[in-house]
Length: 278
Image (cartoon, rainbow, N blue to C red; front, side, top):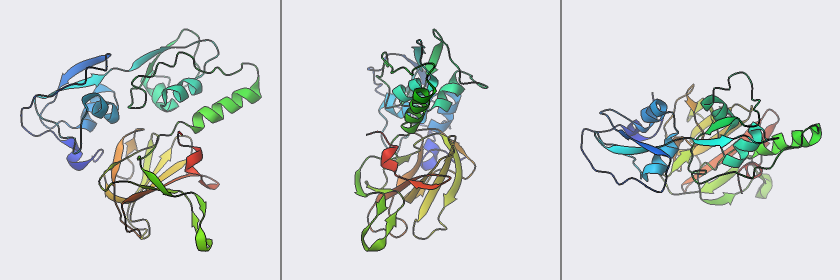
């Protein structure tokens, strides 16, 4: 199964010493086995690929070696306070509600109670987050509670790649329209899934977009990633927020390396800048 990057980060049969990042305290050490990959380790250990990359300061092409010792960042533990919801907590820690529910086996309900202990997935964006002063929703006020849910869910996305925005959403010159944003980035730079979901398209049948990926998310929104150099996922595959799904390129009708990124719902395209953290 293709799931990460080049060769699925397979570990060659080589021995190597590795300098582990000791700034992350809640951790454990594991040994890389022959044939291991970032994807297989993340599934086996129950952590995200991005957390492994961050904790071990891995650099592209993210090669792992048999016998190598790598650090696994343990999930954070958060004590639920009065009035808090999963939406508040997910927003504060910059992770998806679904990931928190999966990690804590909240299979049928997202209800939580004061004093509950929740495991929080580690991501590069929340390694040092404490979230001791989470903004509380106002109980018994449906309007305010609804707004809190919308706002926290709205900003659960992460940036697919960091770079300069060279084309914004909306009307352009000569009557043209951009249904997303275009981000300039170095060719070969990893492209990340902005939220967990399922790959509903991975191919290059649309000439203008070149190599293109579409992810259907659990909030019924879809994200699109175009002009890719390489696609590292397949249709039907489930991906996690922060997972490397592709590499930046200039396929399709563009001349310089960039990522065309869109967010859509049932009514059409949405301005990504209103949904990405500022």
